[in-house]
Each structure stands twice: as structure tokens, then as C-alpha cells.
Image 1: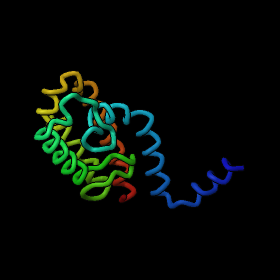
Image 2: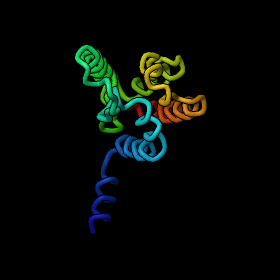
Image 3: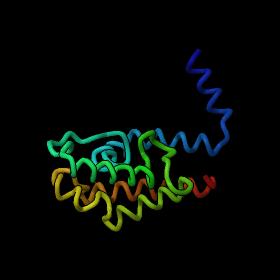
Length: 141
């Protein structure tokens, strides 16, 4: 009964909302593990457990960085992401940041050498967000 109600509800949504939900479902399955490992410590609710995080000056720097990061792109609640612009703009920003190797930022990568996007992971993220951005542009989301 609940399953049938959910299907009816989804069918009543506008096509662009259904597409966004489908994109989110695919994101959770295929891309979010890469994003969680490399991005959500600043752009979401996931926090790395580090020994230095609570040192006074470092804590202030990290908290300020996280506040700025979340204002520009908050991935905490999955797609639709919150940030500057519509979803297709946000996806473009993600693509550009990964292509230009601005994310994850170099200071983060230096301190957390084990957390780094491999060339394969970069290509996977860029390809996925590029494909989904095209879908969003077609739907004008």
C-alpha cells in the first residue's frame, strides 16, 4: 500500500522534479561514496576525526573554511545541492573545480595524503556531473 502511494505521488510530480529525484537516486548509489570521502568534510555534515581539529587556532581556521565552503556549495542533504545558482550552475562549478584540481584544496590534500582524488575518480565525477548537467539543462532546472 505504501509502495503504491509512493509511486502515485512520484507520478504526480512535474517531470523536472522526477528527473531531479532520479538523478539524486543515482548520485547516492554511484557518486556519493567518492564525494563523501573527498568533499563532505567541508561541503557537508561528514567530519574527519583528526587529532588537530580541536587545537585553538587550527579549529578557528577549519571552522571558517567549512563555513565558507558550505555557503558556496552545501552537499549535506544530497541533490538538489544548496549553493550559488541553479543546479546546472552548481554542477558546472563542481566540474570546473575538479578539472582545475582546485578540489580538494591543496592544504587539505597535503595534510590528508590518503584522501586524494585519483585520476580515475576525477574522470568518473566529471563524466557523471557533465551527463547529469545536460539532463538538467534540457529540463531547465
